[in-house]
Image 1 (cartoon, rainbow, N blue to C red):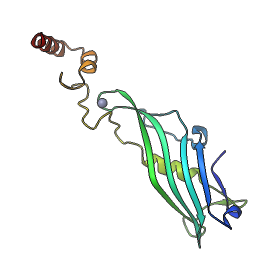
Image 2: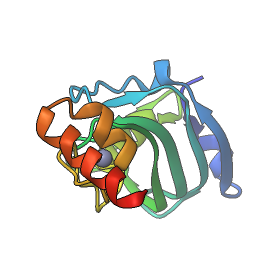
Image 3: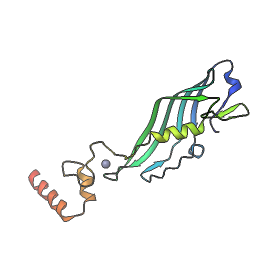
Image 4: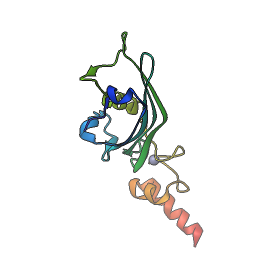
Length: 162
Ligand SMILES: [Zn+2]
């Protein structure tokens, strides 16, 4: 179900909406191959009818899977917009599209959640990447770095330990 709000239901009082928007409905095209979507977007919203439009407020959360751009490690990330506030006027250039008394909020969710995507996903702000020294992400650096140089560095370290 797309996220539709029936304006007639808003005449008397505001509306609380809570649920999930499937990926098929959300239909986000991530050109960025380091970001993958698997789970639906969760929303918790309150919609009010104001003088000249709709006021939507609440929060959005979308779990995504990213590849760290430095070390290529896959990690889970949560795009959260909280608070998310949306002002939808009935008139003017930015006027909202009303269809049979209904407004589809889906395009707005799609547009705004995309803005919350990490530009350069990092597993950790301090991630040293593939070239991290032995004191960094040790095991991973070892397996990812097949160059003889780093292997001997590890051998040196092991000698120190024992
Ligand atoms: Zn990383």
